[in-house]
Length: 200
Image (tube, rainbow, N blue to C red; front, side):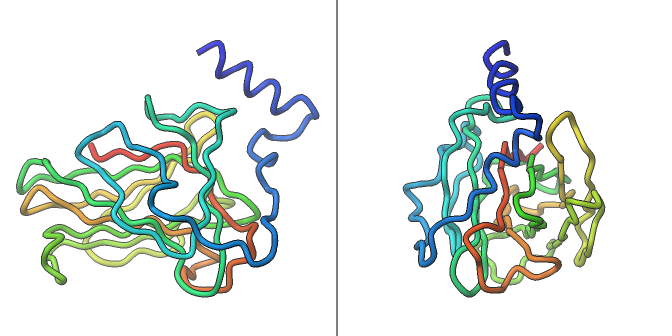
């Protein structure tokens, strides 16, 4: 815990919020990352399964909110959709779960979560999607039968989608959004600091 606050003090030593230190544009033409560049998730029920239009960078100066998870910078690059996909297994059937992410915006980005149960069915009966306006700390849009929410907890914004699962599984997409869009031309600067993800 002491090292966490020391890291924040060092990052804020010039008077600005610590997360703004990571608003550094990537060089033009930066390619998206491979799956191997994503951090390992300590919760064995959740694992990443895909990624598109995202350059990832592990941030070692700041500890993640979820114990054992590294903070990762997700930056939108190239034209198209900008998302990281995960699969969640091992949940109790016919129960409602809260899929939570701890985030900080970079260069004015918004953040989206989409989740559906029955991952092996292209049209699961329970699905929801929400985009969060991180600057205004509000839900920008929502669809489906999930229930989104957002609150500030310390230096992080906590965003979530409450969703029912019939089979104890979800497929989830996390989006770096420009306004309400997840498909656009990434500029190598718009992005998200992801401090943790958790299904509870």
